[in-house]
Length: 114
Length: 111
Image 1 (cartoon, rainbow over the protein chains, first blue to last red):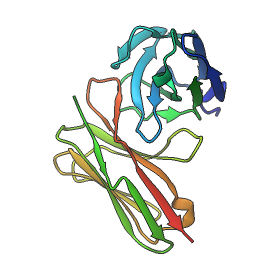
Image 2: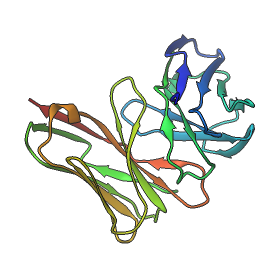
Image 3: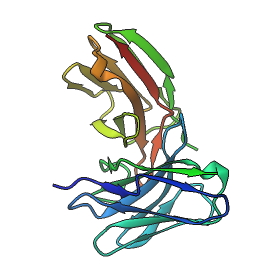
Image 4: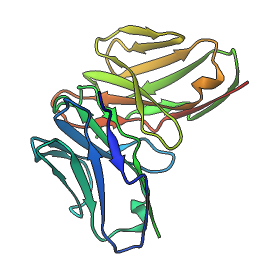
């Protein structure tokens, strides 16, 4: 069974640029959730994708957007990067939509905005 | 807004000592999950507790869900250096998509 994978591992971008992060879900899982974890904090929910549609969103602006593909992999896109977007971005996959389903996290992508 | 508060934020102990980490909220959760996260890695699920008053054991780790399903605790017996890491609690609310995470307890176990 393949676990959740994310790419790239690290990324450095300049303020105002755009970035795309990628996630492959665990085998058999149809739901992907994205979280932002700032240094010293717990993860904050960005949004969730189920059957290729956004299925719930946290308190993040529209410049955070995403996609889910037929194979359940997912992308997170962030436009007009700001310094405060520097964080660890985590992808989690699960077997269903509800948060009560056990979620399995990838290793994350460390984004630094300068 | 649902909030989960964890205490303590930091804990540095000697190998062999016991410790308890607390996770408290004013909100009721349908289930609560505990994770451990090591530097540069994603959180790894340790346990899920679902029923009020439930106690689960994972080797030297004991997890308890409060009777009212608003709080939880993690007790580690005879801590070892391998227990070092960030411990996160996360609450799930029926019908919501997102987990609500606490800010974490950073544990360091000195040999």
